[in-house]
Image (cartoon, one colour):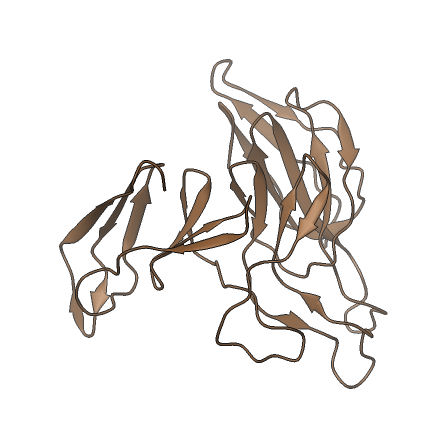
Amino acid sequence: MAAGDRVLAVNNSDEGGESRDAVFDPSTDSWQTLPANPMGPSYDRQAVWLGDRLLFTSKDLVPSPGAEGPSIVRMAQLDGDLARWSVLPDSEVLGDSPIAVGERVVFPYAGSADGGAVDGWGKVYHYGAVFDPAESLWEPLPVSDNSSAPSGGVGLDLVGETVVGDRLFNLDSSTLFDPASGEVSELPALPGAPRYAAAVLANSTTIIVWGGIEGAENLNGGYILELPKNN
């Protein structure tokens, strides 16, 4: 993954032994091993570059089966020099695949779990959330309007979203999600029948959708949407 003007290599799991992560600097054509992570042995090890720092996410290695509780997301922060770690507040989030959007980190999975009827966890844990590093604050994802889940609704599923400036674009619903405000705004629907597996590219003002599949047909065209400057 990109880390500013460098490239980061992160091992996904310590299950086969302790991992050491590294960063490649194209300007010097050299690799640098990162300092040992302060959170210890873990899995679902992932990282996002947010402005001038690296945010690392993982879950503790626990017995499976036999864990006493859920494996929740833990986070640590590495400064821009990639030299000094600091541990961030633990979450109550089960998901993974973090996305850096503006000044927030989004965990995009919808839904929740409580451990089931046998050896339940005693409360509901959601898969998705938004983390604000500046305030060390966790916020829930927006709740889908069509959910009647007893836990208070299922979060908006943001998996596979495209970053549009400081927001996330959902092609299926033609919406933009702003992690800073929590607002979801509607955009004009894509013309024609729903298309799947389309390529989506964007900057802060323009969204391009190209190709995809409509029924049994592979599409070879696309559309451009120019966003209002005040949107």
